[in-house]
Image 1 (cartoon, rainbow, N blue to C red):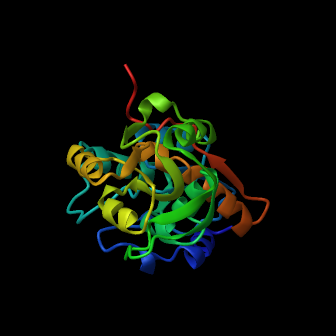
Image 2 (image 1 turned 90 degrees about the horizontal axis):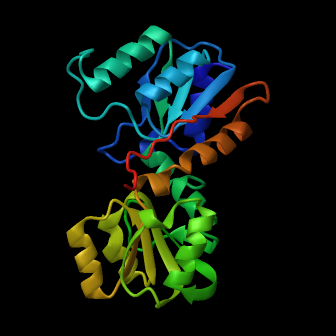
Length: 260
């Protein structure tokens, strides 16, 4: 199947026109329009991902995080991103990224996370203009502490990497969420009546604001809320492309943080 046919299928459901104005979804590296038999799905481009794709002769990588942000004035092989671009070109590997389109459109990261969190009636948070955030109801009220214990199992994440502010014994019925870095939407979640807001990359002052306003806030980390992109994208691709094209998940560990 040709690369442009694959991308056309993705954009039918996750159009580039839906991306935020600061985003750079789309082709990051486009090397013609060859026929491909294998696709590698990865959270982002790293040295190890390029090695992985090159070793297996893969000609298309689909990522969530774009490789290129802002204006690109030169390709410098001594620069990290410049080196990645050079290596990709040399290996004949094209890269396509779907970032905020896959965050906000139906069936993307946020809907998928909502399903993994066993929420029902998942829908966009009322009053949140970007359409990225979601809210949903727990199937049976429980405490924050009880819910977090379940999240650890459902997402296969170590609980010692979670951060929380609020009342762990508070009863949770309505949950708001935003994958990646969504702390800026905390107030919209509070106004919408969410008992708990889940996201990643929460800063100190945001946590203090949540504490002062009585909002329960759970930080699962950027990686913890977005590594699910790979499984979700594979499911989409398997629906969109012929059976003869293999869709493989990167085996690289993208979480840059470790617990010492």
